[in-house]
Image (cartoon, rainbow, N blue to C red):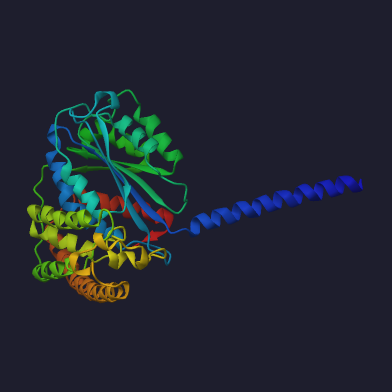
Length: 376
């Protein structure tokens, strides 16, 4: 009898220990800094030029809105992945699907990839592109992460060899919410099973007028923000193998924004003054804040010419000056943006833009984020 009691107590102890360890693991997972993970699956067939243009023009406003998100006292990271589907230039053996970008927090790269998209006729296989994104992307297992797919298009949701219901079930198993955006009439999207796709995937069904001309609201603060953006660019100090090319890419994405509208430049400048715009992989001001950064490991030949003959202490002093300058400029942009947002909010009450990509995305993200204790 005594041995039975000892055996029982032993297994009770082991079971309790396992429970405590499991609880600790769950707590550790929840304490990890949360990440908002958004996969954009965009139809790039012939009729989707308007959708792509909206994505290009409204990327920065979407990112800006997400930069205000909080989870408790923490501010979550942001990662965006990008797929195109339904383009006849893509391989038919891969379902006319291409992963344009893995999950990335490099906002310039995300913009660059969006601007690289072109449209062409093809077959739109919604179930297959959802399943591909589930299989290929690193969604992770942090329970505090907000993981979402937004698929946009205008053909029936039922096309292709992979049943959309199977794909969204597989998404839900990875705690990924599937949202659908039908480019067209609300009822047409319902009959095309876009609404059912969202319902099965635990997400929202939305419609947009993808051909609607984007109305940008000009504010009295825009010119000052644009001037500050030019000053901000001068605080970046490239380094490393890809430093100079990334520095050039930053300027290119400023130019890409300008081709759309001056207000897009303003929105991008606001993003560049936010916490989500981090370029530690190529910029010394951001890199110096990283724990593993060492001035002794810099290759002088990969620095701007004016720094190549400087000592490490001189470079460190120069970086400190640029860092201080950047903080001041970013603060000024954020202060102006507060006034700008108030101005825009008043104008939006007069001129609604509820049927554009930016509006439906932000609304869905905020709604679903509440379920994981995110707030704005």
